[in-house]
Length: 472
Image (tube, rainbow, N blue to C red):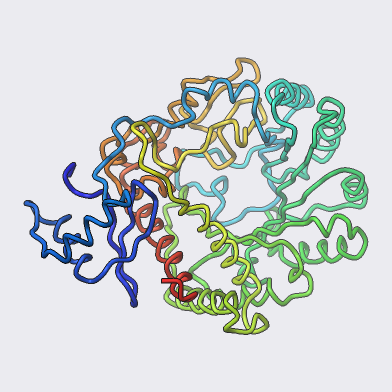
């Protein structure tokens, strides 16, 4: 392996390429060179090459490409500085003000009884004392951050509006002088005028979760008390906010939870053309099935429709198709993907001797999650019943070693990670390696195929747009 170039070969309908791991570049090659590299990677002995191919390969090597170098030691680049960052550079704290919710969503990890590796809906709520202690902790550990964010999470956080109100007023006092933003992730069913008047006076950003059209939404997101659908209530509330509290509506975000077993055309139309959403900030996520035995599989209909929408959006971006004829949601998604590719494939000289795969974030620094009892977790998406995800508490402070273990998750499969071509584009974080409170190399490996497929798709998207532009 050490004598072979550290690359990954790809084809499009038009050209042949290799992704050079050491320089993070995607390079077009001739058919002959592509076949030679393919044979070189798969053969047990060195392959022979014609003089023309040898000349082309030597030319690529002279540009720093086709290096055989691999990372020698696995360690996240931020590992030596983690303790300092946790002490002085926390960017965001998310407070879990309640573990109760007035919804029972079919796919919610807190509703499902499939696993015992996540808590259920409970009546526990955060006390004012824990809330103030958490904000004090945040103030003490964000001294090097001028822009800070406090988020409120549940359950359904607006069930505890009184506590949120106290928290916002207290944070504005304690964090005076910083650029402070508040975010609330809500199901959109609990809005009263007193709540909305308070939000108007403060820097509040609301994110409302929806599941698409009323039919799709009501299939999964039901009221806990009645079992009835929730869409009509949410839509009524949003319209009321738009008409009566426009300053809140203008900053409102919508997160669309997509079930890929359904058609996407109706969803795109709903959030691209409906007057209630078409000028709003809309993001989308695929339904998360990590804590469910029922795994989500994309339907053929969804896959076909999404690819058609994306293709039209690419053409519109290049001025070859009318924007009026495509989904605004799909167009925005493609624009974001194009922008990300500009940073994802910025070239560098070579891989460092010491590095880690790109999946983990800096646990606790980017988005510290504090549960109702004051326990610390890297974010709100990990299991709250897992000891390895508990990285400290308000009483004890950070457990730096546990945070380091999360940061260096790739140590579970160090050899495979160091020799994987998708090393710098891997999406596997510690959450996917947690087996009921124990680290699992097997779970880590089970994600490898998904991560490589995602990385390859990202490269192919990058090439697709470049080829459409006629740059290659």
